[in-house]
Length: 394
Image 1: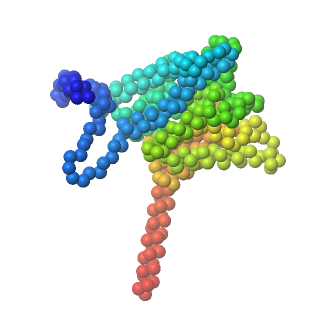
Image 2 (image 1 turned 45 degrees about the vertical axis):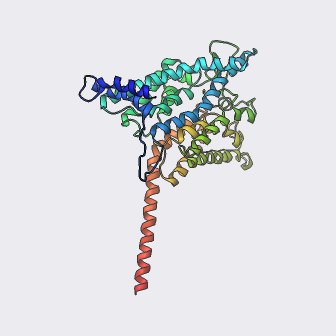
């Protein structure tokens, strides 16, 4: 590492203050800071030691995403070969999925980081690590065969409108990855919905078709998958959202490292379960339901992008609620509205994206009223204590 440090110091000289490439220093420093920052060490005396910074936080989230991503690569090939009815090995399936997914990741990072570098140079600040997670999340929540140019345009929209327009990393009010998906969904709906976008090559091979479970239910049909298939993730869907098991592995990593809020995760699942139970109870009240309202409440929790959205996007520390009580309210409403949107909007049976974006907007309002309630409670306690003192003195 010392050799790399020396080489970087040598290459860094033209980018120094007053040098001819000073304007482009933020772009060069991005590599330097990624490799060697933070490099602070304690020498003597008492210090507060904490290894957590933005870079390590982002890398922790990336690590938590890896299990779902690797499974998504395998499942992409598995769905393709299963529908063709041909024999295949684990590596056949994995390599087929990787061939489709890796280019999307490359495009996402190339376009997104390119924009980040341009804004860093324009504004004269250092490039931060905020896009490490967003750049990986965007491909993971897309259909497997979406054209690369659509991924690129979605990334441009997410970074420019969802992030830089608000001031960059830490200033956005909406989750940038979900902004990319929302843009792609409304701009290119035929590539983001239907029964031919969720399985690789479904549009070019007649033998392949792959409607999602929620899409099938929205069409009034019954599904042929059991709960274990749904939980394990061997079903059609967005690239890395299908396996609830591996999403929960990622959730465990985030919770144990205290990067993700367990309050938001738990309350979101509770909210989704409550909403699903309400609809499941309709027949007992004499109200005829449909395939979505009668879908068992526990299966609502393990299909679609619900678990993935809750764990990796609802917990975004920038766009989520910040207060403890606010996190419980924020998470509960995300799960509650996600299932509600699924059932009331047959044209868009997957509601987690809209639910999270909606609650991103209201997160500051929730925190405001939580804080105001705390202030009023403390003022009330203070007044009661003062009145008690006055009465005692009298």
